[in-house]
Length: 503
Image (cartoon, rainbow, N blue to C red):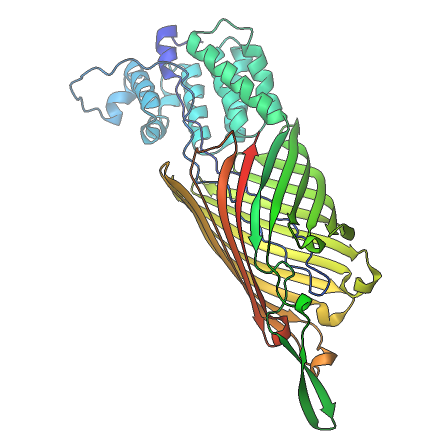
């Protein structure tokens, strides 16, 4: 078996890391509304509001390419290459440096069967093509066999470590990096090894997000704005709708408050592409005057996750607690299942299912005890490095003790994230849903309640701008509910200026 001369071999070693879309944020249950109203629908699976469209990640340079030299163009045919193995290997080298995958595929159609081929070069190029085509399992297995025969090929080992990281097998990548740490590498390769080592340390550690800011809500108590409440009185076949004046406490109340949120999570590689996960979320708002409507919630979750370079699956049990004012309000437990697939670097498809069992602390609200199911399908498309668009379809079903409060709600959501260089970033989304309740309301002449819900959200920020390490973000959210029973119609607008830090 013959080896590639060192000078020529070093020219071969250049690849591009596959760019990955960010993982989507998980769907979470919203904090319950005040007891007079039904619990709020859970938000669907959607992109993290803080994410801007990712730019393609450049591959670390394994070697320093020689300066381009002017050359006289020479036309070669496949027949010229088939009869000259040395010339064919020079073309392979050049195609590798230029990442000319079409030329590599064409030449590899006959090079492995030529007389006098270099088996190291053959396997190396074959592995690079498999990696480029997303066939990571085959590429990794091929590079492992190559290193089994030639354990001193440090640059192949570095490429294998990078490939394992791209395929989310971080512990196996760490083992390869550990072997390279003791080897006599050149400066560029040593720099790459150190960069990979630091990236693996960050991946194994806890990830935190903290946010706080001021928020203004024009309907803290989620009340209907009508000053008169009409109730029917039936006298045989005659029905009279009698107006009743509402007390001021039953009308919408506006207030400022401190809004806050926090998240801590960890994801540890068990073996191969298998992980365990754990995380906790806290969120809430403390109003300046309307402290009876202060709310806060705490959720703990942990479970299993499988992921590779273009797909993931997660099964995550969770438990949660909510408080309204200074009193415990509700508790829940449940399970979420998520699956995501990235068929191309520009597309990401996701499906999620959430089941929650919810119970209220006050026995007066026992009619609202029950469970919630949410199924959603989401597609994201990276149109350009500065524009991401997404859309979701979903079905939400809440079954509670009282049939007139049980409902099903299909919905649709669309949105976009756009950055304008370093000047401005913006995220817009809109959701529209229909709620149909199971049983008629006896109070309203046995009518079944039907609602229509519109929600609009917008956020703006300045990319890269921070104040004391905190990134400011201005948010506006508007919710409007209309339906066939006017007393349940309402709207709410919240404006907030939040400061967030991730570490």
